[in-house]
Each structure stands twice: as structure tokens, then as C-alpha cells.
Length: 169
Image (tube, rainbow, N blue to C red; front, side, top):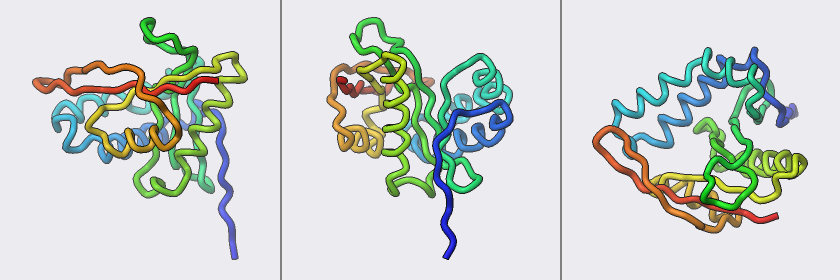
């Protein structure tokens, strides 16, 4: 019997192509039927390998969940960007490739990301999710997130509601 190594590590510039592929795959799965098709493709195309490489080189916190030698998912996180919310940290993105969803990998990645933020003194945390993304909303609720704010975002001609989930130290 063989076992696959599961690890969470920081992204390196050499990971940019694989992170971009993971982003594309995860976003198409998460937002198909929610964000209008042309708008979704525009959003995805803006985040190619060059964008990820530049972000990683500039010091953006990008954690990778590795399954064997493959990126199963990633999280991008740092300081809270919403001045109106009194939380220290924010997970900007947390996505898994579709074949790794529902297996506990998201919870592992969330926990590692939250721990890293706390070790940097960012003990409270917020994450935004589109309200129509049922799997994300259920996931954050199952992790103990409390809905603390609502907003909306425009995607072409469509305006979508989003909700902020928060965790205290």
C-alpha cells in the first residue's frame, strides 16, 4: 500500500503555472452559473501564470495544499482590506480543485492559513463569499464562521450579493 504525502507550504515563483491552473479549474467549478460566462472568463484570464508569479515574488501570502506532488488547492491571505470591518486578517481566496473538494482538504487549508495569520498577530479573521455560492457559504458556516456583513459586487450586467463570515481569536 502506498500513501500520498499531504503538506501545506508557501508558494514559490516556480509554482505560478500550477497555481494559475488550479485557480482556473476551481473558479470555473465554483462560479459557473453564478457569474455570467463572459465575465467569469475575463476574471480568470486576468490571473494567469505571470500574475501569480508577480504576486508571489512581491510577498503575497499564498499557501498551497499539496497532495503528493500536485497542488490540490491554495489560499491567498493577509491583512483585512475592509476598513469598515474590525477584523485583523482576511482570507482573500481559498479554493480547491474540484476532485479534492469534500475530502477535508479545505478544512486543513483553512486551519493552516488561520494559524499563520494568528502567528503574525492577526487573530480575528474575515472571508467574503458570494451568497449564491452555496458550497462556500455552507463550508464557512460549518467551520464556525458567523455572517457579519453583506455587500454586493457587479459582474457585467449582473449584481451579486456577498456575505462576510468572521471568526474571533
